[in-house]
Amino acid sequence: MEYETLETKKEGNLFWITLNRPDKLNALNSKLLEELNRAVSEGESDPEVRVIIITGKGKAFCAGADITQFNQLSPTDAWRFSKRGREVMDKIESLSKPTIAMINGYALGGGLELALSCDIRIAAEEAQLGLPEINLGIYPGYGGTQRLTRIVGKGRALEIMMTGDRLSGKDAERYGLVNRVTPLSNLEQETRKLAEKIARKSPVSLALIKEVVNKGLDSPLASGLSLESIGWGVIFSTEDKKEGVNAFLEKREPNFKGK
Ligand SMILES: C=C(C)C(=O)SCCNC(=O)CCNC(=O)[C@H](O)C(C)(C)COP(=O)(O)OP(=O)(O)OC[C@H]1O[C@@H](n2cnc3c(N)ncnc32)[C@H](O)[C@@H]1OP(=O)(O)O
Image 1 (cartoon, helix red, strand yellow):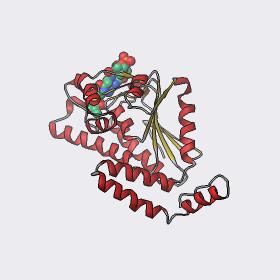
Image 2 (cartoon, protein in one colour; image 1 turned 30 degrees about the vertical axis):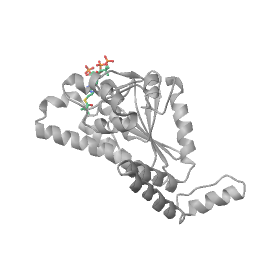
Image 3 (cartoon, protein in one colour; image 1 turned 180 degrees about the vertical axis):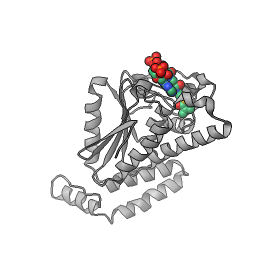
Image 4 (cartoon, helix red, strand yellow; image 1 turned 90 degrees about the vertical axis):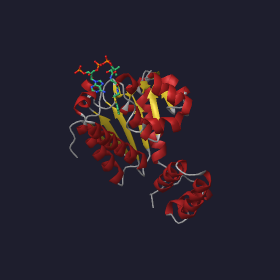
């Protein structure tokens, strides 16, 4: 597919989406947001793709929503703007395939919110992460108030939102905001290693894990636990379950087909 503001690349079972407005630090204007929406659908619908990785070109992962659009927004436009951004983030969170945010540099505002919509975040030590909207006299509008709080806890999330301060990659790891950090020079290699490991697992198990974890987080514990058991029953109908158990019994590596 053709894109103007991002690049996509298929590498084996991995699908790389690279935001590509480096001179504007990959700020999410409407074009980039819509192309991102299209690119994740492309990865989701391609049966060969097993893991989707989102990253940015240049010194930023993504510096957030494009602030140059803000002065033209009426309050109702602003509501639509936030809603559309949130819909794209919600969609990324709900993809059936695992997603990794490879945070190569600035991940600010909507950029951090994009990373928070991914399943796993790997950051460069040199990266800077934050929600600086407070400095614009506004607050996060692409899901950050809710997702950051669920990931790092209320006190830390409020501090990040109320100060607008940027965290280094290392501090972000300490806060539990990213899964791990590595020097920038090693970031792509580490990310590829992790993505390839996950790509070898059963796509059905991966999709069900995501569904049960995400829906469980939105539910009372008893409902989440019940969902887990129901899904566990369903997974016993899959060829991948047969393959996984037989491979163990036959002392060989499984070859999962996603069926
Ligand atoms: C969902 C919501 C509500 C949001 O995301 S609101 C936006 C939240 N994000 C921000 O507030 C971050 C804004 N950016 C910054 O503070 C600074 O650019 C940083 C990230 C600290 C980097 O600073 P520097 O290294 O000095 O680079 P800087 O020159 O500012 O940026 C390079 C270019 O990108 C542009 N740019 C950076 N972030 C941008 C953004 N969010 N929107 C539009 N343009 C942006 C910036 O205007 C500049 O353009 P130009 O060369 O035409 O002047």
